[in-house]
Image (cartoon, rainbow, N blue to C red; front, top):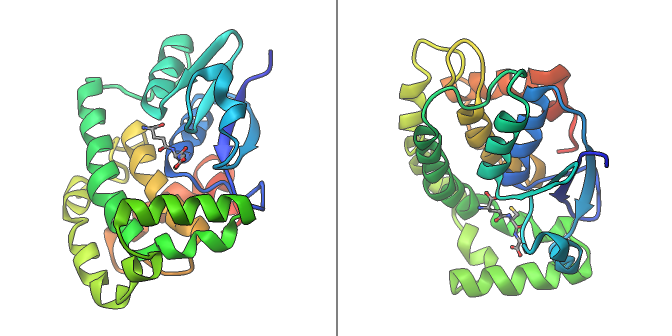
Length: 226
Ligand SMILES: N[C@@H](CCC(=O)N[C@@H](CS)C(=O)NCC(=O)O)C(=O)O
């Protein structure tokens, strides 16, 4: 069976925009593994029933069906030990990077961009997304992102741990990227694919790191519609 990755998109199947799917996409490229991208929309949960899951990414790798981006990365390191490893150190450290990304980074990005997402979705997904997220926030999406220009400095300040971790090295992984880089980068790819709103100042070391990440694997991320 071919290797397949279910990935979130809107009306354009090439514009894959889920931060979690980007983690898996970069992880597969890091391992040098080819895969077929299966575009998936929010309202297509029935298509994931075989995986007993309702979120993407979902990886089908031969007989293995793997859900949760972190478990997909671990599966790839276990199943393909000869390819460059994604997690050289204790998985716990990568879990912390994931927890910081899911909460501080994604929370900050969503507060600046979430109202830009519905325009990318078809009618059914748009209705689902707006109702689901407005319930989560307890206010309209326009209210969530209102005054975003004013809140940008606070978002940039929240990236201080990332700036510190990148001091003296090109990637969080050191001289070369690893799963920590892909985890954080997923958030920036989410922002890049759904919105024109620029999160980073050009003189920010995080900006230079993001440029390096965009160039990886022949510019795979840079080429994605954004
Ligand atoms: N912890 C999961 C999170 C996956 C996740 O939340 N995926 C989102 C796409 S960004 C999703 O499928 N959402 C479905 C929905 O909101 O209904 C992982 O790391 O894979």
